[in-house]
Amino acid sequence: MTAIHNGAATFVDEALQGLTLAYGRDLRRVDGGVIRAAVRPPGQVAVVLGGGSGHYPAFAGLVGPGLAAGAVCGQVFTSPSAAQAYRVCHAVDTGAGVLLVYGNYAGDVLHFGIAQRRLRAEGHDVRTVLVTDDIASAPAGERERRRGIAGDFVVVKIAGAAAEAGADLDTVERLARKANRRTRTLGVAISGCTLPGAVEPLFDVPAGTMSVGLGIHGEAGIEDRPLASAREIAALLVGALLAERIDDSEPGRLAVVVNGLGTVKYEELFVLFKDVVGILSQRGIEVVEPEVGELVTSLDMGGVSLTVCWLDDELEQLWRAPAWSPAFVKTERAAADVSIPDVGEWSDFTVRLPRPPTAELVAASYDVVAALKVVCSTLEEHEPELARLDAVAGDGDHGSGMVRGARAALAAGRATARGNQAADAVLVAAGRAWAEHGAGTSGALWGAGLEAAGLVVNSTGTLDAGTGARAVGAAFSTISELGGARVGDKTMVDAMAPFFAVLTDGVGADSPVLDVWRDAAAAARKGAAATAGLRPRLGRARPLAEKSLGHPDPGATSFAILAEAIAQHFVDWSAR
Image 1 (cartoon, rainbow, N blue to C red):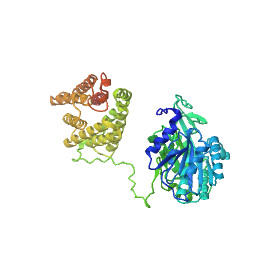
Image 2 (cartoon, rainbow, N blue to C red):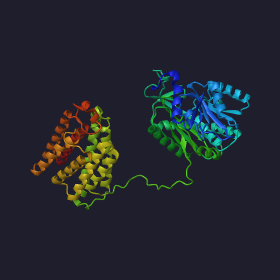
Image 3 (cartoon, rainbow, N blue to C red):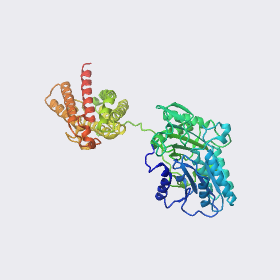
Image 4 (tube, rainbow, N blue to C red):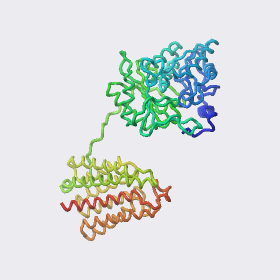
């Protein structure tokens, strides 16, 4: 909900005060909206946009060189008055005329129209271009009835660039109309927006669904569909927009805007944009200097829209032109971009180690892969349990992170073994892959531990019980050193230390190997269970020490689970 305010009645006025305080060198407040603070040259056309507030960066955030000369700002989702529009236009007209750009809504058309009449009666040359980009609001044959949504940004960008370049009013108006004619938008919402002071959203989207064809004034979509993946949403939006492709001789070049409507985060927008570009590329369409971000929002609405504008040479030059405003910056590119070689996907699993592999280690490579497979399947089985443990005082991602790391380690280990490399190289490759894909502290530590174990195996050239114990010791030492943890800190070390101690003692006493591993695994399980009585002294759980008390550490638990699984694997393997 829109929670930060001092009352609905003063929300817009205070927001504009704050905006002009933050950007006082660039914006000046006038009664009715904002205008550029810097004096514009005589003879430059003034592009003025506007409408109801609640859509920032539109409209006040798009005032600046290469964009608008001023913005008329009404109350939230409410048309500004004719008097407001009159005052803003009067303040920015330097004698070359004013082009009004706003969405095709009845209240805006009425009030801006009255202001235009009054200004013309006083001798100002004022023109209007209504933005009609929303394909969900009327059929293709009735474009004049369509409303304007994120296409406002595209039209203002084109018109503002033309005005900045010194074009006269006739030319700026023609280009704005051309841009609008070639611009299409469609959006989806997953949640409604809430007005300042209200406790309920203007509309609800049923859980697990998305509303297609939303408006930006809180209007719900025209159709509810099951919530889809980013790839499916991209296909829906692109397909609908390309169905109205401009049919002329121009090449397939599109200005593309992926626009967040308030609460959809940038990472989500980038995922969607990636899928949009993939579909357009398959259809032979070039994307020209795309924009991904929040440009025309709807307070706190959860949703996204896709806008495309079919470019020709004239429009493309203006779309690429530099611009600056508090909310949007486009810089001029160098004449030639630096060429970056295409390195492709990383697929070289060759591991270079100090000593050449022995025949014994080459033969044992798939034994290590088999153990990695056990690690992977065990973690997949216990992922929900580890997630619940981590959620007590962490972010709940320990299970998923361990699974990602193990899957990557298994894939790298298999690829290394298939490349006729030895068991030591398999361990090193698996460790590096786990560190890269497991993410977080656990991913880094498990990766470093496996790599350290592989280097010990390489140095000995064997895989006997003594080498196994030394490899575990190297992993333990590396993990302790890198993580900075000691016994009692409530980490993986609390399970790993007793495991290593029992393993070392048993191997040193020449006890049966299988018994030693089972005893060591039991010691790890006991150590992990004991962490329930500890308060964490390291990591993300430390600030929530009291909350963690009574629950075992997820890292220690996952180590114990894996120790037991590997011990059982050795038992099963020996029985064959």
